[in-house]
Each structure stands twice: as structure tokens, then as C-alpha cells.
Length: 290
Image (cartoon, rainbow, N blue to C red; front, side, top):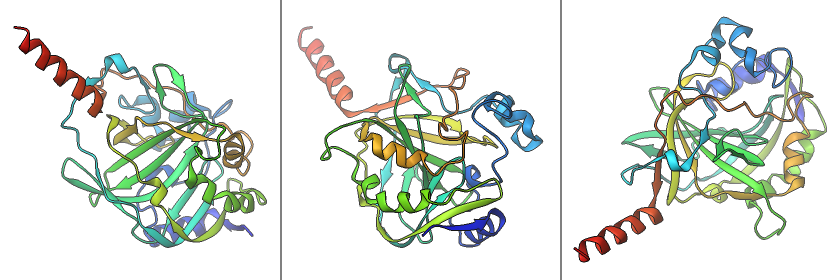
């Protein structure tokens, strides 16, 4: 059964357990919304700590226009296979549902810096767009370095029908989501379900194609200088799985995607091994024809 705990108690316990350290997307009560009063256009005015939501020049999410990306094959994304953990906890923060880990799960390396995997959470519909298209859902894998800088891997989802093609990771959480949905959270309380031993291997991803840019967290306080990596492979999700992601959330937060933010001249880089190979073959052919 899901347990209902005062927000301050669970926030302090998670902090002491280093479950999310200084990851901003989980700090503070839900004093913002996704529509109407205190909606995305007003986040920067909710309180001074959220000013970056309005004044920041490197905000997320963004629309990724493929033809405007810069192909860079030297982009790095080294990851170790995520481990099985014994104390995973599914948490309903009211505005998002996250899966937190009490021990070290895994890490990734970007440009020689190690980022430890801290937590993951879902948004539906997706926050990032590709060529103006918004997807069904988006999973954020939040990582943090020793200097408290952050990097997030985003996985996009679209609807699929075949059970064999659906994301097995979400399928493993089906029972936990059902238990979580039986008790709603509010701005002063969060609900949590102990998942226990949990294998994160299905989260393992390939790095054959991905987009990279510098942005921010997508919820207040919208902290910037976050390195975003959006995977090129879109995974499949069922309508039932999307409903499970939305059901426990507070009213007004069922659709928890921040609107597209201005690019403000930022460069979006693309690592695409297939496109790189095609370019090499074309160059070789042109040289042969000289």
C-alpha cells in the first residue's frame, strides 16, 4: 500500500540519504501549475527563487529542428550499464512521478566528467519536440557530478500497440503505479511506494544517435547550465502505461509538459553514426571521381 508522508519529512530523508542531493526538480512544494494561475508563463513571478524561469536565456525544453543541428561525431556519451538496486522508491510529488534510488545505480561520462545517476521521472506529453512534433511521453534520467552540476538524458516515447515492442521498464512498474494511484498527494504531502529490489538494465541505451545542447531544468527554479542529451531512438508506450503515469498526479498536473522555450542562438549538436558513415562514403566517392 502507498504511504502518505509530510513533504518536509520525505524531502529531508531523501536529502540525508543522498537520493537526489541538489537536483532542483524535486526541491520545494508544488507552488506552480501547468495552466491558469501560476502557469508556465508566470513561473518567474511565483517567487524570487524562480526568476530564471522568466529571465534565463538557456531554458528547456526546446524544439529540435534536425536541419539546423550541427553534426559532431566527437560528442561523448559513455555510460556504464545501470545496476540492480535493493531499495528503489516510486514517489508521487504531485506534479511528477519519480523513481529514486538509495544506492549507486550507475553513471555516465561526458567530456571526461563523471555524472552519477540520481533519479528519473516522467512527463506526458513530451517536453522536447523534434521538427515541431511533440511525443506521447518523455523520461528524464537525472545525473549529478561531484561539483553538483547536472546532466539529463531524455528518452522520448510514442504510442505502440504490440506488447513485444512496449518498453519493458514501465511494464515492471505496473503494480507499483497501481498502488501509488490509490492514495493522492497534495502540496503538503507526497505518497511513495517501496519497489524493493529493482533491475534497471532495461534502461540501458545505445549512443548511436543523440542530440546535445545546454539548457535548464524544466520545472521551477529552472536552474540553467544543465547538459541535455536527447536520445534519437524513440521507444514505445501503451495508452494504459500513459494512464498509469497520469493517474496518481494532482488535478491540473496530469499534462505536465512545460511549453517550448526560445533557443536564443544556442547550438544543437547531433551525433549520428549512420549519417557520419554516409558522409564519409560520399566524400570518398567525390574524391574518386576527381
